[in-house]
Length: 423
Image (cartoon, rainbow, N blue to C red):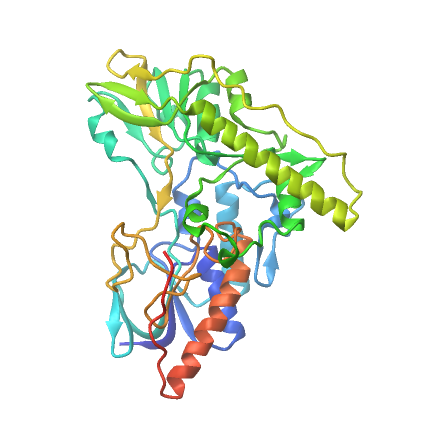
């Protein structure tokens, strides 16, 4: 049975960022990947999906986007190719087509069983991705037979959909892009809107993420926010990447003819039920946007920044006078439901007691309560940008430093106590 100091599970951008940082400290390791490098980028997403972040913000330890369109937005396949190129450049020790079937504590370290044999390691980094499984609410079981149900992970383009109307549930980045594309294919679309984070694509002449990066918003640490649980559960930013740098918010969707409804709260006797809180949710999103822009303007003034247009504000979200509170799913108007309701990791193979009652891994900035066990890639893991490709570098450096300290303790015969972790 091969032994190695550290096993990294997953060869996406997070696992490879850890590999580079481990190599920088001469910590021997192996990266186990169930498919090819960047497997999820290549195989699991809507065909037209693009990154929310401009290409110049695609940065990894010792590597960055090197193409001719720094202000463009990579497609999912292009992002996969960039990550694969990164693995080659850093000579990451990746074992592809090696699926981890279980991970458990073993003799003061860990034993990783795979379909290609087993590995013993002193430390393990879980980097298998935060978006391995689509979240679908339990009420899907009450949807009438005859209505097709899909998630963004198993639907590639509008050509796969049945004829007739489409209900898209969820109005974060994925939901609004899918709703727009399905509507442009000629289908009537209803969008069920829950809590969302409204952002313009551009602000004062520059990409909104330029402002958030320059002003330090994306670098805000997990131990600096007053409500970490809420911060980690916020939906993704309501942005799309496009060559036109267009803002895709609820106003834009309404203008194109997409019908807005409140959050889907239930399905009873074939009828979908929507919350009446749509005006409140939109007002809250508008308020939070205003606060963010105020902070960005304050930073620009304090930094003496003069290279942009004057401050600007955006019209409030136009809420329909009478948004629908119900919809008869048996009447034939809706033939397909797309559940754009988020994603979660797949940790079904993890046999270490670090999960809470909801099946979520308990950690403190990526450090679990079991010495030598770490996780990468979760929302707001250590910084607000942890879920972006650009966030992997700083998080990997922090966790590698902690892991190196753990190994030094092991070498001197003193194992650290289990950590007291946050959820």
